Image (cartoon, rainbow over all chains, first blue to last red; front, side, top):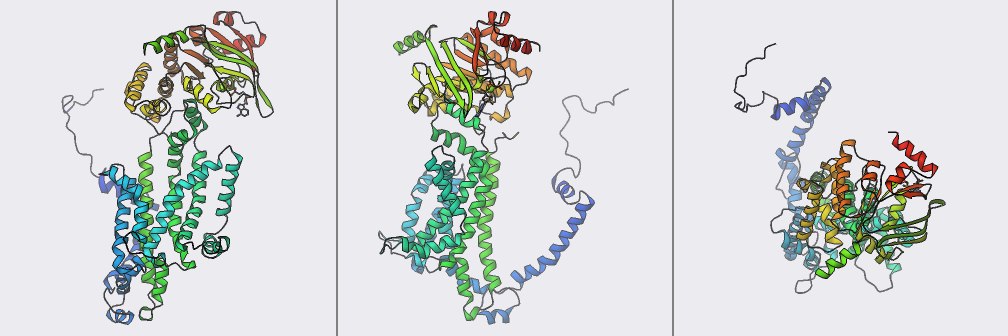
Amino acid sequence: MSTPEQKYAPGTHPDLPPPFASTGPIKWIRENLFSSPANVTMTFLAIYALYLILPGAFSWAFSDATFVAEDRNECRALNSGACWAFIAQRWQLFTFGFYPPDERWRVVLAFVLLILVVIALLWENCPARKPLLILACVFPFLATWLLLGGFGLEKVSTDQFGGFMLTIVIGVTGIALSLPIGILLALGRQSNLPIIKYACVAFIEFIRGVPLITLLFVASTMLSYFLPPGTNFNLLLRVLIMVTLFASAYMAEVIRGGLQAIPKGQTEAADAMGLKYWQSMRLIVLPQALKISIPGIVNTFIGLYKDTTLVIVIGLLDPLGIGQASLADTKWQGLSSEVYLFVAIFFFISCFAMARYSLYLERKLDTGYKR
Amino acid sequence: MNEEATQERVTHTLGDIAIKIREMHKWYGQFHVLKDINLDVQNGERIVVCGPSGSGKSTMIRCINRLEEHQRGDIIVDGVELTNDLKNIEAVRREVGMVFQHFNLFPHLTVMENCTLAPIWVRKMPKAEAEETAMKYLERVKIPEQAHKYPGQLSGGQQQRVAIARSLCMNPKIMLFDEPTSALDPEMIKEVLDVMIELAREGMTMICVTHEMGFAKTVANRVIFMDEGQIIEQNEPEEFFNNPQNERTQLFLSQILQH
Ligand SMILES: Nc1ncnc2c1ncn2[C@@H]1O[C@H](COP(=O)(O)OP(=O)(O)OP(=O)(O)O)[C@@H](O)[C@H]1O
Ligand SMILES: [Mg+2]
């Protein structure tokens, strides 16, 4: 059998473009949308559903919406869609609660610093990471000072906190504290020392077995019975403690799952090399256990963040609380869709960002040892 | 500096006791797993331990660096008695390296980080020096080019050689091997055994649980046979293989030499 003659001398064959439709968007569409009859049907059904929903939603939210108006009736007279004028007039209340208007720059500054700190903590190649990490260490004190005042700034009472700002204060504190406390609880639960072990088990099981609302009620009312009379213990602080403890108990169980997935050989190797208990936990076990637990950890974070809306039951005005109060205004009655959609978008953006970051982190930490 | 070096050479001359085990017993719950173990290991001595599965070989060598706790008797390693005192345990572990059947490399660290971890955190060695040492030992086990890969990207034989290099980086006086080749494919066994033979030539004190009888014949000063938690027989390899005294040893040898 004769082989066909080669068109090019060996080593001189040019790089040709791939055949049509084997790469790029056309390939993607063919493989993902039209690969089988069932897939084709699903694609068309999905397009039809979008056709039914999207135009209506779009005109309600944008083309038929009113952005400037004095009250509900003016809105209705101007156009048939959403009345964003309401939100436009109240967004400051939604953002800052009742924080004194002249002092709001402090909240904004604290928020900007928070963003910088978060970027530095989460992004390893961030420019100027070193100074930002130092900032991260002092940030808790700095933020407390900025928000509460004192030492040269006008004092602001925590009663005046509200809106998204309150959500972020509770959410960020809870997230930042529940991870380390959860780690300690999870390690404690595995301890050989019975006292530590059973204290951790009792704590976790008690907190997990009680609804968060109950804990918040305890924080707002019953604590004053337990504490010596005359102690005036800030309500927001009590809420922060309860939310943190609640999230820590869940976190501990998520991390315990991760710890159990680490083979015993890892600690044995670390022991055999002479590493101390805390060294082997910090350098060997926790990095691996936390990596496995990322989905569960972020899940707990997201749950905690959304649970901050429960503080409404003890009278703190989070965005939903502000929304309800605003809806009671006779000038703007009947605009609950706009208010709840607005608040929902805020929560969705925060939570979606956490979810995406967790996916990125999982991919980054994958060193290919899952065979 | 000079003085230290001479001192080290003196303690390493054969004849000094590296490990001394006296009337040692261990139980797992009700189960009497090690019974009256007596063993002296001299510096520079190479000992191979064999015996049927479940006879307590792993448990015995894991008692030497206190991965398992013994309940009766004494174990003295390099002049330090193993008790509940954490100081003693740490002192022993600094001087005793261990290689496991399943390598137990740290999968989230690169090969280089695996090797420098203990020198940096336990010996407080500066990072640059630790990396230099690590490179030296990685070259000795013939995989310097893999230093920046993760363990998951290496073959089994390469992983086990990294594990050996990782132990050597602590500059141990004694090395324990627990079936270092039994999780490996045949073609990889040789590359690991070669490294171990070289180590033996250099005078390392070694206790090695293995069923590689060729290895035992090449390097061992003494072969120990264990069964049901006891040391049944020990002898020089020549005598041990050609002229086993105990009938259980004979049975065991006839079984493994059949293959
Ligand atoms: N953690 C434990 N708890 C209870 N029993 C154990 C434990 N570890 C080992 N054993 C038992 O102790 C005995 C000795 O185990 P060991 O691992 O030392 O055997 P071995 O000689 O190393 O066997 P192999 O050749 O299979 O590795 C076995 O019967 C085993 O079932
Ligand atoms: Mg074993």
